[in-house]
Length: 292
Image 1: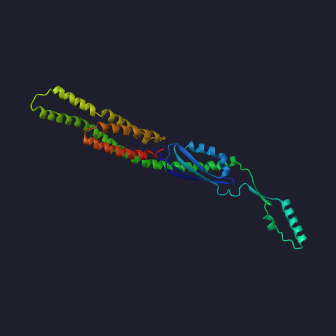
Image 2: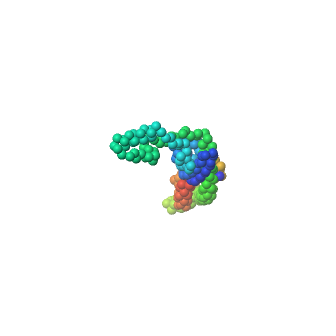
Image 3: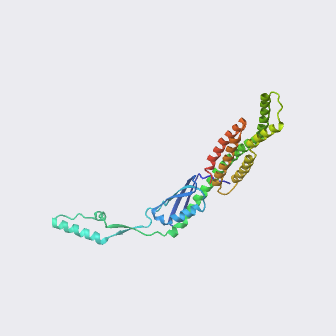
């Protein structure tokens, strides 16, 4: 089953004192482009996280949001510089005595003095954090891929309908080409008869002219290649692999064959069908841009 490149997935996991929530959003992209937003302390894991995602997702622009809901004070401890506090208190008392006033320093004012309380950050055990982090990421990836598969199923059904439309028009073109040659032979015969006014015409010469025209407008080679390309395209629609880039190339080849048929066409009916085909192929191309 083909997959779309558009989707969303989320995951949450706890392990020990750590908790992680992960959200993934993806849109179409030529390659797999991963953009991470996560707490600064997890930066050493960035390369490993990107590799983990790319091993599981082939294409798409993927925005990753990693949060630690309970991590605000984790790894932070408050240390009181008692000597500095005592020095401030002693200085305040000495100043009050020299001025002949009552000391006003209290514990609250001492704690507000810069440097008395210091925040110290303890190093994180990243190995311990990786277990819940990657568990949450795996959940988010699975949810994202499930949504992309559902979107891919809708894309497949739409493209199969468009493929049938194209195949039907190609089949009509195959039937019209011989009619075009016969119509040309009749017109040429009538025109020559009108111009020669009863003078006998070499039938071999007429046959040569018709043969040259038939060769000029013959599209059997193009329709045969189209049939091959369309069957290959239908097979890709039923594939479980990432075939978006192959489809993009194949739709260019299909469009090239249709353009060649249009340039050879001497029939207004065929020309009309070619216009329909080109419009439908462009719609297919737009849909293919979102297939993984």
